[in-house]
Image 1: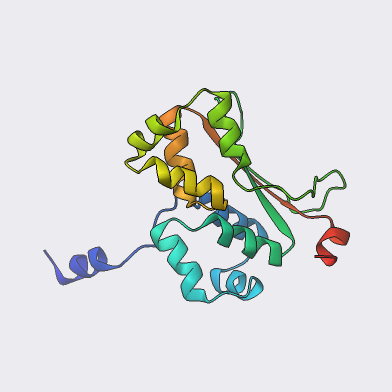
Image 2: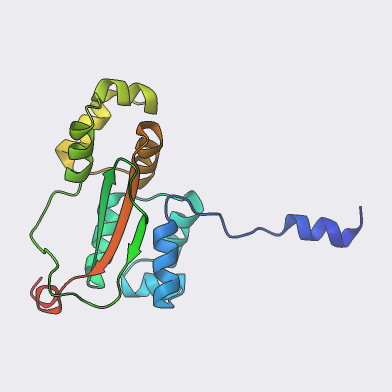
Length: 172
């Protein structure tokens, strides 16, 4: 093996994103680098790079970051019949619902609508049912669990990123 081929194999590549692919696509669509995004959401570059390295982040952190730039991220989970899983809008729309909502209502509804028992789900995910109760009580969860739940249940996870109406954003 030549020295040149050894060096090429040791070069680290940007981690592949699966759970945060929607965030990667959003940054590309906005033409923002990770440092630019970090600056806009008032976070350190290291924190944002860490999200991509581990391909995960807290849902509350995601919402707080997007609130700072005037966007909202809405997750939904449905049985497969959708054409597109990721939708990103750059221009504000007047018909956006800006009512406060619990972040995990979509997950609670999807589990209920599809008759998925939390005990069975916890076993499949390798966690305690108390962890799932904690998610709903505190409205907090790591995003990677959404993808794991979708895979286990056969549902499709949809990520919708859209701007908040400017007047609503200015009054926050």
